[in-house]
Image (cartoon, rainbow, N blue to C red):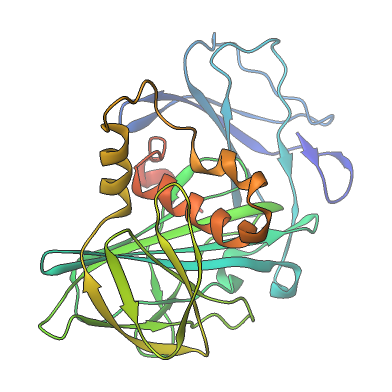
Length: 308
């Protein structure tokens, strides 16, 4: 157990070993790190397992390799801070997928923490706009630097239909994926809002077969593999008229079933280095594509989510 902020081993940290099973994480044992930061589990670790450490009120999750090369593993923890200026919002985009009378909305925010401290969750600067009229409840899934996805509830702010989330931002990149469904009325219109306090631009993505109309949206790119169009919002808000229907997920599935296809195409993010002029837009689209195809790992149990 190493404290990366102070550059020293960290003692008295509770560490719990979980065994992963379909849809659940089952606790195996808990130990406390010693004066030199070391901890030890006597149980044999075979198959997927997760280590969970709790330090200064922040939960750290780390997946263990199914076939570890050695019996040693290092867990890093950090000192907390309440200063939101240490983090940077690097990407913000919304995918609009009109299917019949419903509009499926997927919003993603990427946050980078280049510091060696963890931003306490109650000071998270990320904001989401969610319309009051929608089908069911929105779902927010968060993937931190360790790659373990968790679901978190939205927390209302003092602004109408604007929400935040209580989730610590650890050093590295954190991805927040919000999804919900709204009715697409006869006017086939939807309001896009950028409610982030930071100056990161909002990009709006429309799948093949869908065109967005607004004097505050500018088409800036077309992704060569899915043919999705990437728009950029000019200003903070736009009323968008939606023409056509389509889904990024359905388009990719249709492509994989096309004639003469011998193997699945490489994942979109593997192609981005060659598309230098479209780097930021294509990186955003890659994350949306992965999210919409449902490649998340098993979620942590509700009892563990509550401690974050």
